[in-house]
Image 1: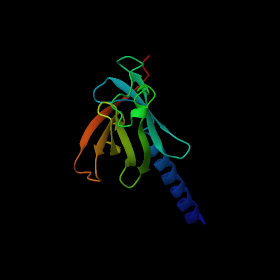
Image 2: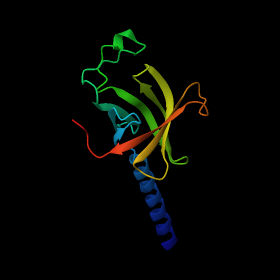
Image 3: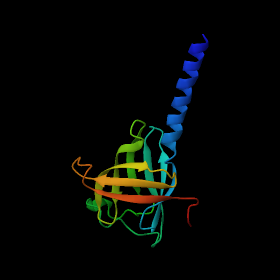
Image 4: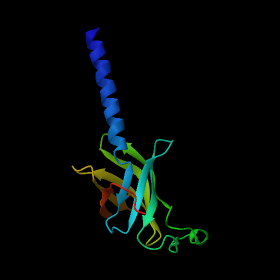
Length: 147
């Protein structure tokens, strides 16, 4: 009986630890260039998304590089640039999602992870399923949303 309780407690602890690990990505992040802020949040479907919440340039800057001409009149401020990430506890990273780069209008497969410091996150975008090819970029956690 005592052993069963210990096993159940251990399973509950490890499950809650996995959930807290998955959610540590939630917050406001500054990409490497430092000219924007992206809010990463967990949606009701359990996946993680990121939305541009601040731009150093004008607030009304449009997504002029979007490959879909019908989307080029949308503002970058408020644009969802990270989509559909799930936490992989085994690899300790968020994967299966995409990142959109408004600077060139391209969408890349992407995964994200922390290396030590919970305030520095690395994103790696890649194409054609080739994770060994691509570009990695460090993002920094921001305490407050800029106005």
